[in-house]
Image 1 (spheres, one colour):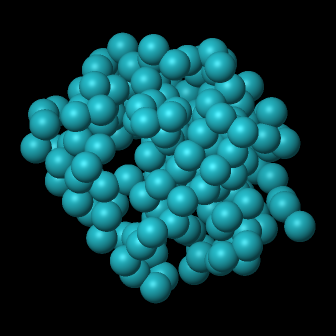
Image 2: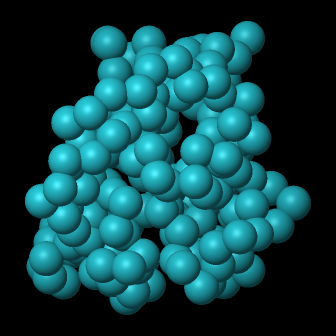
Image 3: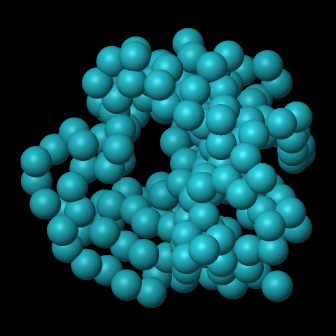
Length: 175
């Protein structure tokens, strides 16, 4: 698929194998992914396998998820995704930004563009997001998007740690 979204500073495009080197930079970095459930990846093969799966999702009429590469000029700085839940009626947001680009609002800007795209193309109006309760940057990003914390609970496992963590669920409706 040739989808391309543009914002004031960013371009979002389908995440695919061509993003391998830059994806490895943040997907394999334990510091960059320390608050994530499914990252960091174990090795480059895991990164490539995921990129190939993402590319295939973009070709489906009814994808299970859409993962975009967040581009700042020609530099891939992170990913923003939507997973379709409840028969496509709920969109679960997720993101990772390379730590070299933290603190500039890129996740919020990219997620807002993806929300608008998914709303228009797929008719999704209810969006959710999960984050480690100690991931202040992600919690703040969800709030800036207009999301509200509706539940906090234990049992979260981040891939970098065996420690049981607390998770926050944020939600919003977009009309």
